[in-house]
Length: 135
Image 1: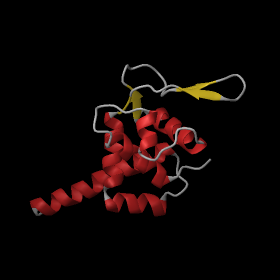
Image 2: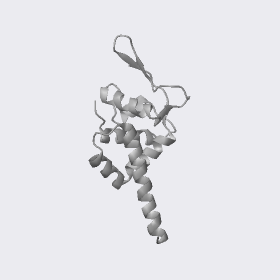
Image 3: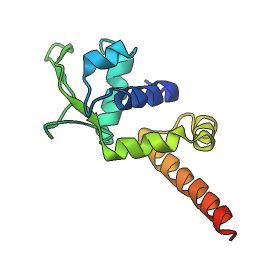
Image 4: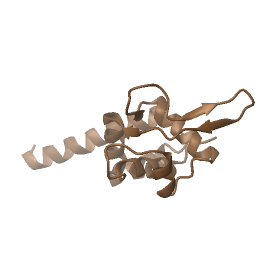
C-alpha cells in the first residue's frame, strides 16, 4: 500500500483538532477516519513507527491487536500527537513545503517525508529570518 499524502496530513490534523490533549479511534472516526479500513490501519502504523503518535500511558501500540487468524481487533486507547508529530504537521502545513513534498516526493517513505519536510521548513524559515534581518 502506498502512502496517501492527503490522508496522512488529514489524519494528523484530526489528532490536533480533537480539542483535548488526547483522542481515540472513535473520535477519529467522527472526524471522517474510519478505523475499520485498511487505509486507516496502514497510516496509523506509519505514524506509530515514526513516533508521531503515542499512547498517553507511554506503552507501545495504538490500539490494534492482531489475531492469529490474520484478523485483528481494536481497542479505544487514548492517543496523542507527540512533539515530533506536531513538528511534522507544522512543516507540512507550510504551503511551500506541502507543494514540494506532494510533487517532488510522491513515492517517498514516511521517514523521507518527515525528514524532507523538516529540512524544507527550516530552509524556508531561515530565508524568512534573513529577509527580516536584511541579510
